[in-house]
Length: 125
Image 1 (tube, one colour):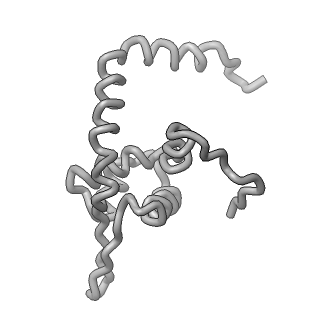
Image 2 (cartoon, one colour):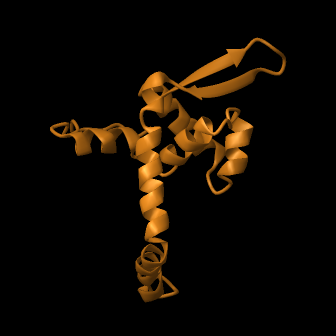
């Protein structure tokens, strides 16, 4: 596993939020857990492009960052459910505003994102 050699810069709120939410699927995981999708298999179905391994790593990081909690039920086979902590719930309005901004600027964002892919050579050279 990757081990960071340089301590992160934690001098402002943006640095702090980046350290916590860095990860391709973390914001979506928080949103879907808030919507009631609590089991790992449910989350996998909501984010099919993510591998189970990556989702598990990011769920573990969110748990370590005290944004979600994990409950393991003593049944066979074991049942696991995730839920937002009170601290994690404070991020939902922020995520909602970011999502709304994306919706409000959807066409422009799609255009600028796709411009990058259209200018890349097809064979990677």
